[in-house]
Image (cartoon, rainbow, N blue to C red; front, side, top):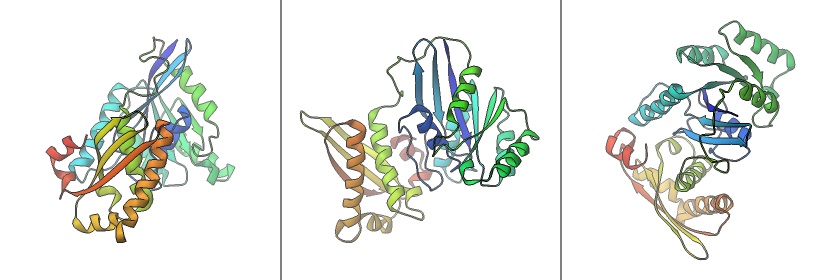
Amino acid sequence: MKSGFVNIFGKPNAGKSTLLNALVGEKMAIVSSKVQTTRHRIKAFLTKPGEYQVIFSDTPGIIEPKYKLHERMMQSVKSALEDADIALLIADATKDLDEAKEIFQSLRLKVPSILVLNKVDKLKPAQVEAAMENFKQSASYKKIIPVSALKHSNLNELLSTIIELLPEGEAFYDEDELTDLPTKFFVSEIIREKVYELFSEEIPYQTAVIINEYKEKESLIKIQADIIVQRESQKAILLGEGGKMIKKLGTLARTEIENFLQQKIFLQLFIKVKPKWRDNDLKLREYGY
């Protein structure tokens, strides 16, 4: 039996969450075309009884912190660096590779690493070869694997390489477990994902979601959540004219939460204004950061 922690690192928007979801075959991390979607370290388990258990961790994109929220996000990255057995370093093949190389070198990894060159479906074969050659010259990776996480291409080679490098050991979690995070966490993340889908500019980055009530009744689950914003003007945009936008957000979130829980839900959303919450230690703790 092989088991261990395989933690995913990279710049914002490199495709870390899409890769995690593709590897475990379940939507465990929310995804968005906007940067800085992931704020927590999200663990997901892939188990083949008697053969292997891979504990994947999606981590926030590596950035220079501007707020205390960013500092908390980078602490998640640090904790993932400390317990990794294998590091998956994911680079967007369509972007500036030198910047990704600098970030990977700055991690000062002490464990085997696999360079995952993502989004290669958008490049010509010669461009993929050139990008792989570029990385080969900069550091010693156990392997450089071109993939398309979105299109699930070449993931079998990646998974085989991961299993090959995993240390021998017993499973850390029961074979039917998918994560160590509570259901409420995923519910709040789905609501936050819909904010990223529907709103632009600063709103997604200045929004938090708190689940205040999660009650399982006979026929449905009652969920009440607060959407936290920093300014009254943001609250007005989230509400929309005549409450149009909050209704749309609620409908999209409810549909996906019901699919996730496989049960009917009653979802109630409130919007609350908490100025400068991203720089307030007390609020960050209260909101789960």
